[in-house]
Length: 398
Image (cartoon, rainbow, N blue to C red; front, side, top):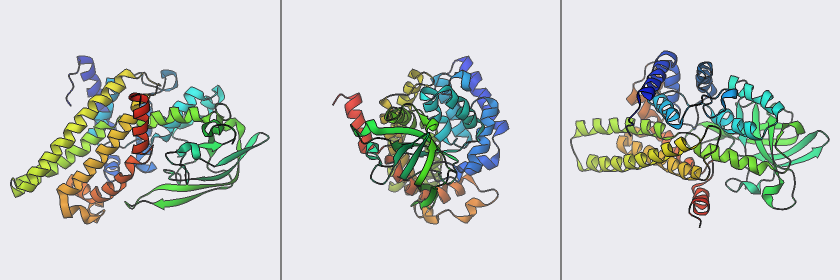
């Protein structure tokens, strides 16, 4: 989608482009290109986070007094678009986009002073302790217990599908502090030091061959009561606020469009080499359908971003954005394997890890693991069926 920009926005876009040319090194761009997991490894995302922090562009959604940019929705969209086109790494979102806004909204002044600066500096690397065996999309069924013992909680239980827990030194988690009343009423939101005795992390290899997610076990883990965000048994409110940020506060369409463009370039090359066969004609038709879906999603995303003030969650429309982004992500990865065909079976080909791999080599080497890992996009962060239920109730009044 082409935007008609005012002279001020053109100047802003040119400033972003100049920054990317000067501060985005080839090794970070290549690291993002070779990432088939959900997020790049810390050695890729960390240096880029540091560069954004130095420029003052790391946390656009935070208030200015805590490092926010004060950008409008269209400025955020321009920034994310230019980063995607340049191949910049994704910033690990657990701190800056998820727990950070929760601390800003529900944390005490002492908690803000303690944690927010460490998120900005990268001193703390966070993971999310929500899902459990038997409590994934139905988070209210969680059973990890936190029992009060003086000034501490003693935590026992486990978490599942915990992204980058093997890298993290901090976790924000939902724990059950009461079994009275409705299930949602006995949950608390707590911050956990991952170095605390009694915590163990076990890797879960994904179908795409990545070590991205983990099981985390708690065996009599003592956590200070002061680490709780909000009131005891009131963590569900924090969780809902956080999930709206997880599902809808990011801007997904620029990355999706960048990926689709790379596949379109391959499709154009295949058609040029093989001629206009029935197969390539059908592939072009499917490409047009996916592009039209992406255009519609981009318009909805831009409209939403322009209507949400910095620090505010997008509300129920977050479920629409999450569902559409997940399905588009899967459709694009599926199309990539279809266009490349048998070449996509090379499975992380060695030549893609050479010193100077071509764009085509990188794409072909990562297509299959990327396709396989994308199957989870309609599950994590709330399964597609759950999002449809939220949309029916909150947006359609069903």
